[in-house]
Structure formats: C-alpha cells, structure tokens
Image (cartoon, rainbow over all chains, first blue to last red):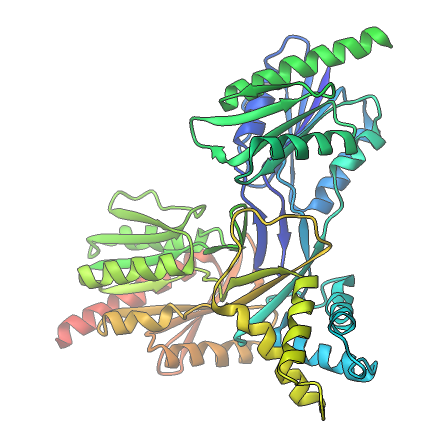
Length: 263
Length: 263
C-alpha cells in the first residue's frame, strides 16, 4: 500500500519579504505518517509537508516540501498522476485565501472615487447600488498581485486584498476516484453539533471516506479531541493525537483492504 | 561588555490560525552573536530573536524569544531599563505593518456606502473630496482588530487592513543614550547610491553609530553584500555574512572602548 499524507501549513507570499502562514506544526500529520510507516501492509508513505513542518523519522517515508497552495496542488497532481495512491490523508492546514493585491488606503480610496465618478454611479443613489459599485471597484484588482519586490513602508495604512484559493481536497478524488480520502476540518469554539454538521458537509461535498473534525479550543499539547466521521453518519471520539493517528490508520487500512477485496 | 542583538523576523497574528511573518532566518544575527560571544572583552550577549530564528551555540549567550513587534518593544524596554547595555545590534526584520482589521469585501463596500450616504458626501462631488471621504471610511476601523478566533472562509474576497507599527529602532537611544547602536536597512533592487542615501537617513534619524545597508538582490547563501555606514559618511563594503559579522564586532568594540575612555 502507498499512502500520501499532507501536513503542516501552507505559506502565501505577500511580497519578497512578507508572507502569510497558517499556523500548523505538522505534529499530527507526522504522527499519522509514523503510524502508517510502522504498519506491515504499508510499502511507502509520501509525506507532502510545509517548509517548517515536523517530519517523521521512519525510513520508508518520502518527504516532499511545498510552500503555497498552488505548489501543493501541482505536487499532488504530479504524484497522483504518476502512481497509484491507496489513501490520501489531507491533514495540511491550507490557506483559504491568497494575497491578490497590496495597496495603500489612499490609493484604494482614490481608485474607488475614480470608478464611482467615471461610471456615473453617484446619481439616484440607494445604499445597495452604491455598495455594489464600491464592491466592484474593490475586487476588480483581484486578477493578480501587481507589486512584488519589497513593498515600501512609508504609508500609514496598507490594504491587502485576498481571494479564495482553490479547494485542494476537491481535486483528490478527481485525480484518483478509488483512493481512500481522509479530510480534516478545524473550527474554533463551536458546539459539537455544529462541528459534526460542518464535518459531514465536507465529507459529502468532497467524497471523503472519513473526516477528522476538531476544534481549536480542544487542542492542547497533551490532549487533542478529534471526531472521526464516517459516511454512515457514525463517528468515534478520540482524545489524543496518538489515538487520532491510530484510529485513522486502522480505519483507512480496513477500507483499502475492503476496496481491494471488492475489486 | 554587554551586547544585545535582535535577530530573525517578527510575526503578527491575523487571527488564531493565520499570521504574517517577515522572512528572516536569523542567520546573520546568529553569526554576529557568535562573533561577539567569542570576543575576550564581551561578558554577555543577550540574543532577542523570533520563534523560528537560528540561535548561536556559544555559552555566554542569553536567548529571549519574542513574537510580535509589541512583544519586541516590551522586551527591549524591560532589558534596557534593568541593566546597562554597551551596544545594541538591531538585526531583526521587524514588521512595518500589523493587521488592524479583517473584513469581507462586501462588508467593506457596504460600510463605505453607508458612511458616504449618512455623511452626505455624495453631493457637489469632486474626485478629491470623494476620495477623502472614502479614505476616512476605510481607515476608521484601524483602532483595533474586531474579529479574532478563526475567521470563516466562506467569502470570495477578504480585505485585511494594516497599520504602521512603531519604529522600534527609534526607542533604543531613548532607553540608553550612551549605548552603541547598529541599525539595519534592507532594500530590494535599488542602485547603490539609493541604498546609501536611505541608510544614512536611518542612521541620522535614529542616532545610530553604524548602519548595515543591504539589498535583497545581493543576498545569496554564500555571498551577502553589506555596506557598513559610519556617521562621517564613510562606509566599508563587505561581501559575506562572516565579513559583515566581523566588521560589526570590530567597529562596535572600538566604539565602546572609545566611549569608556572618554567617560
């Protein structure tokens, strides 16, 4: 069996010296990789991780470092078109947004004012149409970052526009429909019912075989509460990173075996 | 002699899971610390560095980890009011901006439209007064981040407003007027004349004794061009991190000695 694990947090560059990072140490991903690597039925673990992420020490683990969401997408596409992957454990904290434009508050205000005047959007004004006009003006710069290098620091206020990144998890079953897919959902301070609802939504939308749903408020160094959601609407509650790693490995291996048996 | 060195890059949190980091490994700061620690006249090196920064291995180095610009400022104030520091080598890449507000493009547009209508700024409009009104609306949220936790990712466009951080270097001679101060200036792809101009500007404005001016385009793993600027308008050109570290240590030690002699 070949297992691919993503781990750590992606980084999106604002300019040559500033970047936006998703805080994730890769501790859980690394543990999961270690657990798979120790399993007798696993031949190879491909560990796709962020630059600073923890890496497993086991010898049958191939480590591939990635930086941005785009980089992650390219790497997954390359690996998953080159070889059969039996399961993908997508534990990486992927940036939901990437910088699309960096400007000063002054330049942004001037651009909006210019657009409103030029397009004659100030007459017969109601608040909704005015807001629409302003919104159009704000997001039209989203086609791509214009200024790179190191942006000057001579202004009091900078405005960074960010646009949504592609959902990497949605590509995985497209690349290999038969791979066993484990998605991860991290929320912050929500009731368990809400965590379950959002977790099952992710599972269904992306054809995951399992989803590990967890809440930032219930993650500490020693404890880490995780709910392992299954398509039949059942779930297991796990209380440490070790328990989570073991539960994922057990369930995924059984699922791969069942698939092989079935095939 | 007691030497304080700042190193690495500060990190400003956007929310509980996203942060903006200044890319700096702390390699040069760590080398400078090592070089000072090896000098017979140096009793103690205080190394104030970012969470992920490289640290020197010498035994007489005290390591203090900091995260944000505010954290750095608090730490410097505490250390420099508690004991006499003979020199400060301020090599840290300090964030020029910190997140002040995170909102959706839709909410920003709606807020601007509301402000324009409520304040009746749409009549008798010329482009400048309209831009001023929009600018006021954009920056009025700058008093502080309202939303923390993990910001939802259900929107196509997010707008992150950032405001200027205090210039840490400007506080150092205020805390201890007699300390020898080395400032750092990093620019990106400018002519040497411009680098010198901006470097001397920093030197004069912040009463630095030396400024190390360098250009991102001339920093590679093995080579690192740095200009060590002195108040008499002379400067030395250095070509590696080792040369830079040695030149800073030599010049600073001589300057401290001269100060002691003079006192």
